[in-house]
Amino acid sequence: MSMKGLVPMGGPPPGGDPALGPMVVTERELSARVADLGAAIGSDYAGRPPLLIGVLKGAFMFMSDLAKTIPLPVEFDFMAVSSYGSATRTSGVVRIVKDLDLDLSGRHVLVVEDIVDSGLTLSYLSRNLLARGPASLEVCALLVKEGLQRTPLDLRYVGFTIPPEFVVGYGLDLDERYRNLPFICTYVGPEASSP
Ligand code: IMP
Image 1 (cartoon, rainbow, N blue to C red):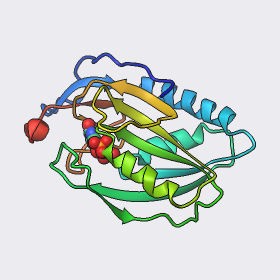
Image 2 (image 1 turned 30 degrees about the vertical axis):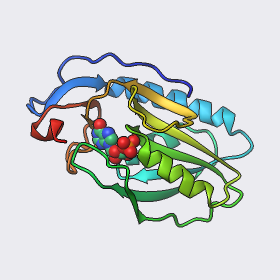
Image 3 (image 1 turned 60 degrees about the horizontal axis):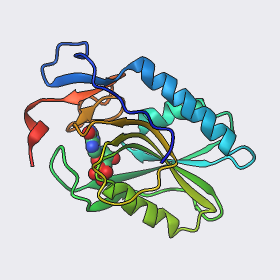
């Protein structure tokens, strides 16, 4: 794992929604870090532009902002997965809801993920994508929850390592809400501690 910074939790987010807890990553921190990641990807992939694979829905905002900062002719594809579990916990059983349109053979693939919690979703996806014969496969995860991974993962790019709290915003949801927040904060509403 490389390029991570542990984020201390901040004050309350703006807006007055009582279900939203402390700020975890501000809009300004997001744009600075995303630009750093884009520059690093640009230099690592010089001469072999990657195919970016966005994992929907959570990664849509990160993927869009990240792509604009990569100074290479990248291509895009998207996959949608759904993992079984409660509103705030993954079970690790993953179903592909929308598969890729493109063939991965011989491509330099960079998977763009919103958040790695247990790591079970990513571990499933990596195995599935590797079986399609890419020239290389790396992962860029915006967020990694500290210390929760139940499976060893090789994350080439990490935006922020955050405390093990349920978070929303910047693409991340709770039952489809809060994806459009321009920052990331903890969710402390009723479902926050459901099993
Ligand atoms: P994992 O399989 O436990 O690593 O969970 C990964 C997936 O669960 C992510 O791609 C998200 O869709 C979802 N997820 C995990 N933690 C959070 C969170 O704190 N907020 C919103 N979604 C989350």
